Length: 257
Image 1 (cartoon, rainbow, N blue to C red):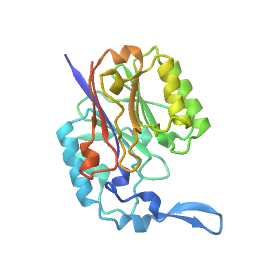
Image 2: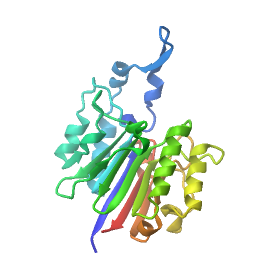
Image 3: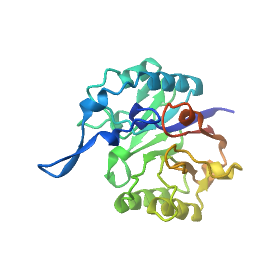
């Protein structure tokens, strides 16, 4: 039996468990828009968390990984993508935005494996939040849902997932779906009612908090029925959160190919 390992992790912009990029957001009085003070953010020492994250990746050896909240200042002294390339990972070219070096969600695949085939994000809307690709015969969407529900984004995602429930399809990532009163969780529940499978629960587990501050379950792996039958194991690994690598747990799925 051949296994492919898919991993999703919100890396909190490499700020560890406590430093948050949004703390460096400010309101520009001229245009009344919010911006990030990237130079100030770059001064946060990310060396320890990055070294621990690299060791974690080396240990878990994912074949394909989705890293969410990977917005990084151009002023950083660490070449995060370069280090991953030295570790044997390439990124899906199309998930790199034209206007910057990084995106909110990026996909990396282990060299020597089959290369993912990039597919445009549902509705071509807020494309930096999702990376959709076909990996071997599996359609995978790695995504970071907005915390404050974006109805247009959720409509595109819901329709896309619903359309592919008869395919081998996986939705994985930080779905910000802990609050049953908000649209994110309602969308997830609607998918489950249509036959999608919450893999963590289907494998006999209980709802598990995956984020340090809210202590809610924000991170999911949701599969179509056919793909659910091919998933050998799933792990919500709290060690990334408990050790201070980031403020989220990793979601790791092993799939029979």
